[in-house]
Length: 60
Image (cartoon, rainbow, N blue to C red; front, side, top):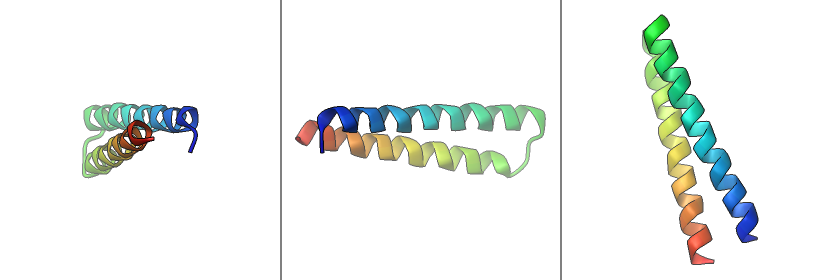
């Protein structure tokens, strides 16, 4: 894949992770409950995918 394309996908995954963290924190403060863990898991998966894309970009 093209390095620029991998960089764009990496940035999108990082932004998704940050938004999921922000949504989880907001949900924890306002409502609370078990959905907070879902947002945390989504953020963790997003950062994991960004790390995988970063490694792919470095190898190419």
